[in-house]
Length: 444
Ligand SMILES: *Cc1c(COP(=O)(O)O)cnc(C)c1O
Image (cartoon, rainbow, N blue to C red; front, side, top):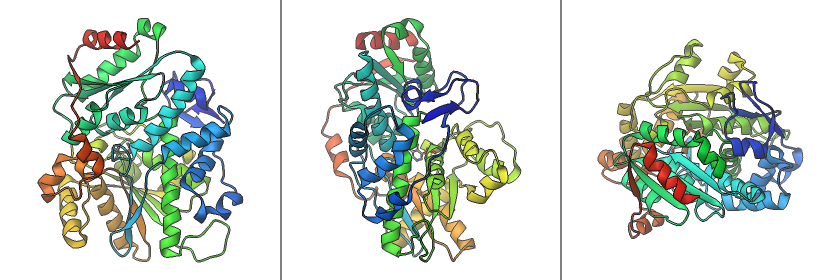
């Protein structure tokens, strides 16, 4: 498979180059030259397939050629080594819990997959790799954990001092080894500016391979398809309604609702659908950052600044992955609107939904999941004959607001209890590139 730039001014590259480069020179996004279709063979024994086998078969056409099947299978196996349960909340709403991985969020999947691809590719290069990531919370932990102890890769995570939650900070700062957590006296934008300056430092780039593990990287984007298949596998078993494509059984495909910020996660789901995953409809649930819901209403893309909300991992004004969604639908607006709706949910409703779902069903939602639950519930009120699931993108304990709203985080996962016993290791710097550069030079 080869990848082109959505801006169409850069050369087509292999999966390997797309992963190493992250973004094409023309500032577009890499996109596969064609979207593969899953074969009838894939579906024949689908209900009984292992997670690793599904991951391998789904990703193989996208990766094909740049590593052996054996290596790719092992990478898939290491990537999906945790549970992805589909849990019933109401009569017609289930949730796909994506928070059972190392840092309790769906980003673990993409980060684990990408880190292992980089390990393979940097082994071939015999050159040290430094990954630089700026984080406002969730991304940093997933990347740090994904790359932990991966040979030949040093990871430098920049986070704004005092602006990430307790659990998020511990996930970043308690690893050690090849992971350096840098506590920047500034905000997230300062962290991002520092990372950008470093990635453009020509002198540094002569001595070491620098990359960003950005969420637009194909090696983080594509593996996010996996868990949509795991959800369908469980959907078929719990409701006996799942239709394997081309068979004649009863159909009742799920409506899939994805809490969205940068739209990478939902874009992976739509891609999976085009390859053959049965799905009734996608709902992109956003918080007050409503550029895409408005675009689907009016056809106009506004230029807005992001606003801070309870679901802060989705505080994105102009989602970068949306161009990939347009690409999937060949820029056909009507086609897109047929398959995808988008709804904006306010903080007030988010908090209210968390309280109601906790009181009625005893389920603790995090603010991102609450946005998803509400959008799906509203949709199903209008379409009572349908049913669906939403993605619970992170564990409630990662967000300090959950306790303020509900008075509880639900059950504390074992991994979080362990975190509190570990010493915090971080390096404090000013929001100043000279400080960061010194640290980077020590890592070469
Ligand atoms: C990153 C993140 C999102 C948004 O995902 P996108 O792929 O950027 O749309 C939603 N919820 C949580 C908890 C996240 O960390």
